Image 1 (cartoon, rainbow, N blue to C red):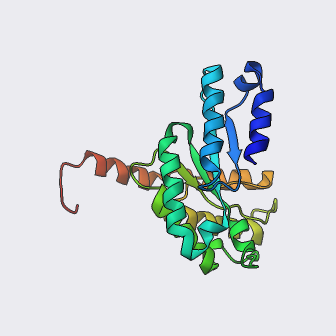
Image 2: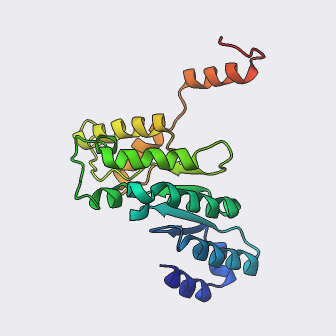
Amino acid sequence: TVSQFGIFAEKLTKDHVKMLTGFTFPKFNSINGESYFTILKLLNDKYSENLFGMPIIEDRAVIYKESRFDELLRIQQILLKYDNMVLNIRVGGTDFSSLYGLRRDVNTTIYDLKVVADCLKDILNFFTRHECQYVVSGPVWEYYSWGEESKEVKSLKKELQLDIQNGFHGKTVIHPSQIDVVNRAYIVKYEDYLDAVKILESRDTGVF
């Protein structure tokens, strides 16, 4: 909570701060968001450091349709104000699902849960625009296995592919066996690299 963060921040020394990159802000919303970043800014000013905040958007005001747009707009304004302290935004797929009593099985991606996928789509719309200098990472995959051919890993790969196609960059892992799978998914394919180079070098304004 914000109060816990404030108490923790008061106990930090300069030596502590030098070992930190930043903090995770769970249940981030338009009510607590400004307070989280106010404390973070005070820390940065006090120690002349560049600590970052990672908001986790998982609040019921975002998943509920009637309040979603207003809430996302308010969060957007907070993050624009403190964008130099934000590298990444996380989304809470599990928290969103639980509000509706949903839990995807090992063969089901988060995009198959339509009420959650609808919310994720809107979050991406607000926070992956050209003017946003941070990225949004995909919701956690809850199943793990060391077996490359296991259904847990195959379904993780499937969800990662959908994450990338929809604009998510990165994914929170809950087990070491997921790290290599996620990292491999975000390696740029050589063909995609060549396409990007051609587009950037092109002087044409039309289709080529």
